[in-house]
Image (cartoon, rainbow, N blue to C red):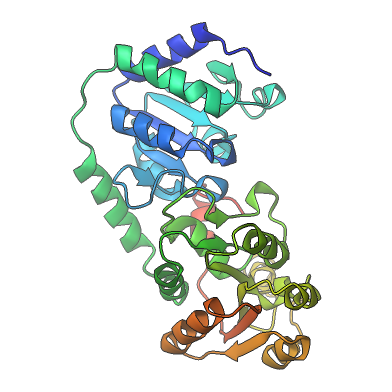
Length: 354
């Protein structure tokens, strides 16, 4: 149990209410307060930024919703920022906080002094703190002009900067369409997964599941099985590379035995693609142990008793997804791909992490 420090809440409300250009960063600790974050954002006309574990807390279709890289543009003029259930690693470690007052709400007291001690640390559950904070903001808030045009311009610029991410964008747009409003997407350490964190629209909390900071290769398929068991009536898609998928391929047996109707897309380039790109770009092209010998994934799925498809076009992929969603058996869709463009340019600019 936490005793909420109302003095700190009042101070935070005053700082945010009087701020000219406030900003909100959210992580997994804010997944249960989507409505409150949305209310706070609307009160302040403050952009809300989610990266990996913070996606979907504010609907991507809201004009104030940003992913991490384009938020850097607004950060340059931010005067007060509040981090809710997130370490806010990238801005704190790489962007600097000169002239910015940092407020943090976190349930873990030991996390506060990691990276950089906030100006105003509030030890509390977001579910307890946000309603009280909103009341305090209301007392001090001043009317700001709508940021809709400004935010839409930032979003448009970001969309232009990421047009090179093909075929990932086309795959993700198709998946987004087929998942509908409530479908769940589980990312992985593969180029389609990396791109999803910064370009894919997410509509609701807990519908974009990510490994987060640790970057655990191979976690996606078994994690997605758990998501489908928890939410059997909504479509769930797991994306994986061929290397990552093989970490837990044996769980196909579990999925067939228990009729877990997960749809898994295996993007097969017959290598640990990200590792090989690093070997080529950072180590003088010295490629070692990153090429793979794979099974026939369609035959493998069928051998387990699962549905298996191989697709070579977006239309074929759409058809396979729909068949998978309609089945109570697991579905594996192999998508052969060649070399894909990397999100690494944004990593070099300090806008994302690995």
